[in-house]
Image 1 (cartoon, rainbow, N blue to C red):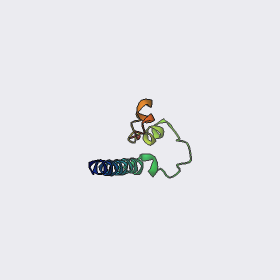
Image 2 (cartoon, rainbow, N blue to C red):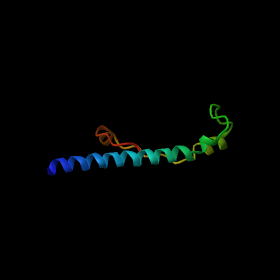
Image 3 (cartoon, one colour):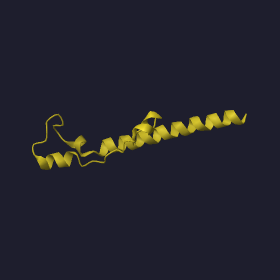
Image 4 (spheres, helix red, strand yellow):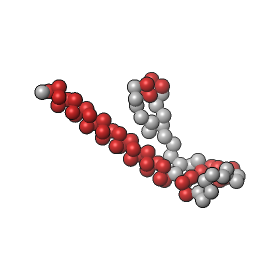
Length: 74
């Protein structure tokens, strides 16, 4: 019985972790300055525009050891 409860708790924790990751990622994508540029398919016209487009929040990518164990980027 204890094993089943532990397994269920781990599954619920994984679901919450994935929802948290998706929420953080969506917030980053929605608030990125590049999302508000009218001609996103065109390259930036000058260096100032390039800096503006890349001024959004950067995601932290885990090292290879953690990625191998399924840790999400974020």
